[in-house]
Image 1 (cartoon, rainbow, N blue to C red):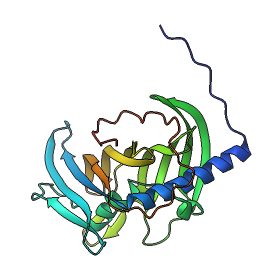
Image 2 (cartoon, one colour):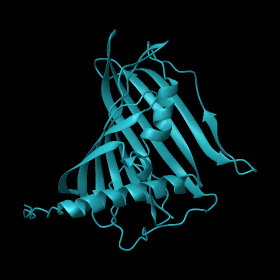
Image 3 (cartoon, helix red, strand yellow):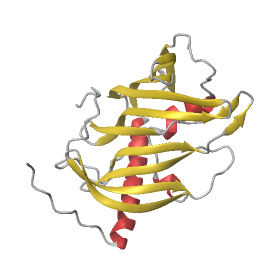
Image 4 (cartoon, helix red, strand yellow):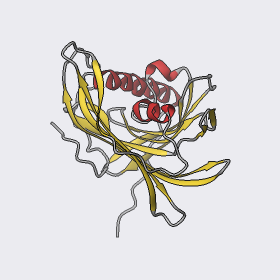
Length: 253
């Protein structure tokens, strides 16, 4: 039997405001820092039947690299013909894989969101503050994150995000655009950056034509620093807790 742990203390309203500013500032630093890294990204969307069997797959793998000129490029390394039935992976889906699912809320976007404190919880080996995040308004042509984030209570860094991309039901020439609800896990890279290493989604997309169950997996591996122009602000890794178990094998260097 386990002893019951006492509840974790809640920060004051003023402390909550500071925590939100701090984790958003670190998100911006990490997003900029990741622009100086090469890495491999696997994107896989499986279409399921009502019994959970795979009936179709979209898969692409990308190397995120730099040309000799220093220009950042995305090179597709694996892209078999997709076997999806009645589903199309759209430009918005690919944008979602590139930008919304990895990083959800930086200082630049903070003013566009309502962020509400939900509680102080234990997650695997760490303790974290949980926040509800939703856009204040939906502007045409923009995609937003709506969901929850878990912020490590010692380093004030997002270690997990769970939610979905909005708005839903965007009409395009090909039909409706729906996004699955996802969870993104982070791991610490090079002793200072909490980068996404694994995103998973198990959801049913309710199209006008009917419900389609899907499973999505994104893995980010082989992070390697290419150049360093990013100044690290207050993210020194003093006594950093272990990240939550994600089932990934992203290297820690």
